Length: 164
Picture 1 (tube, rainbow, N blue to C red):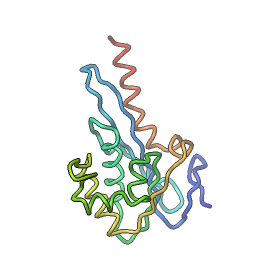
Picture 2 (picture 1 turned 90 degrees about the vertical axis):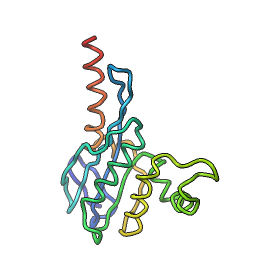
Picture 3 (picture 1 turned 60 degrees about the vertical axis):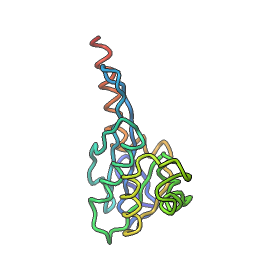
């Protein structure tokens, strides 16, 4: 099993590995924002990381981060996405996203799913590519630069609170 920096072990060595996470923070204004981030490991080592998604809601930021990272690579490249988010991983692993699409992006006959625009893009990306969706354990996500970027919002919150 290949190992990248920080001893992170990957399941598939010929894949691009994308670890996504998000963190939320309350700003001085009282508004809550979320940052989603992705760390990307390719060809056996750390490739890049970036804070990619900002949203009022954490899950939307994480979905945007995953989509942005996936879209960095050509369609023929195999990708493995890791997240602690059951919302993201189970949508693909348990077939929720197929049901949402068949139901016109609704959970039931009335309730439209949140973040439908991002889900539609993730659905398209998943259909056009070879993507494996895996639930990450806390250690994997905690050791990625994605988690560090997402947690930067928490540090910003601490700085704002101490200056009050």
